[in-house]
Image (tube, rainbow, N blue to C red):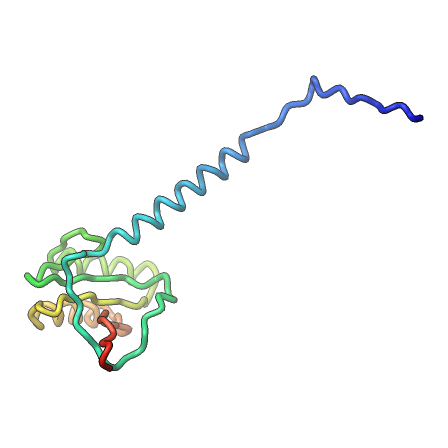
Length: 139
């Protein structure tokens, strides 16, 4: 019968730094992705739509601009005036070029507020504008 060699592991150490780095990266990723889902304004009631393509959220560059029933503009639940919104869109356009915009407007919002967002986008050079709506079950 062969004798088994015993290993002396007393001098071996396991470096935990890479594992801790990975865990922190995962925590940051989950916090950021969870926060993105929470940033939609729950008070906005979208209009019903019978026609139109379903939004699949394929383009991560999409900027979501919300217009509530009082005409207040917001991005990620941060309320903005038209000048601030225009500056944000312009800076993003200058940095990355064209990108899609999704307008989530309350169905009770006045059209002039939605049109103001559309005008800001077209003045800067954004032409890919979509509107969020709820698929009408009767359609």
